[in-house]
Amino acid sequence: MTSVTIRPVTGAAEYPRLVEIWRSAVLATHDFLAEEDRRQIESMLASDYLPQVLLTAAEANGRIVGFAGTARGRLEMLFVDAALRGSGVGRMLLEHVVAEQQVLALDVNEQNAAAARFYERNGFRVTGRSKVDEAGRPYPLLHLSLAARCAG
Image (tube, rainbow, N blue to C red; front, side, top):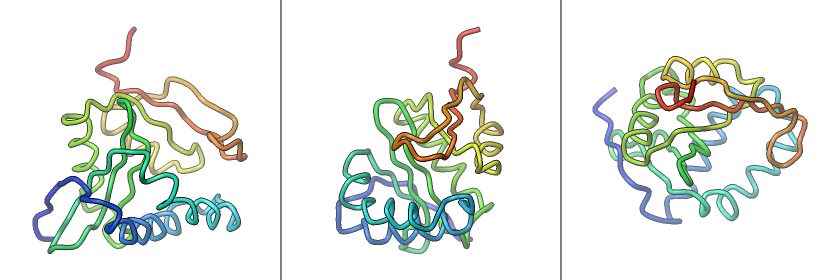
C-alpha cells in the first residue's frame, strides 16, 4: 500500500464513502450481528451517528480507506475497508486519535474478539462489561480504557 494520510473528514459529502467502508468492515467482522440490526444501523449511520462525532479519515491514493469517530475523549467508531484489514490503517487511526484527540476509552463488541485483541495490543485494557449495546440490543460490550491512564 502507498502512504496513508490522516486528515479530518471535510463534511457530509464524504459520508457515502464512510458508509461504504462501514458496510465492508461490518460484513467482514460482525458475523454475530443480525441482518435486520445491521440494516437498521446502516440506515441511521449518515443521518444520526456520523454527525455526532469528530470524524478522522485515513486516505490512500486519494481515496478514504478507513475512518474513526470520537467524542468527549472516547473512540465511538473505527472502521477500515475490509480489503485493507491488517494493513496498519486501523493502528494509524487509533494512534492519531489517542495523540491528537486525547482518546482514553472505548467500547467494543465482545463478540468481535479480533477487535478486542487489536485494542488490547494497542494499550487498552478491559475495565467493565455491559450485557447489551447502547441501543439495548443483545450484543455485549467490553468497556476499555487506555492502560497508561488507568488508575491502579
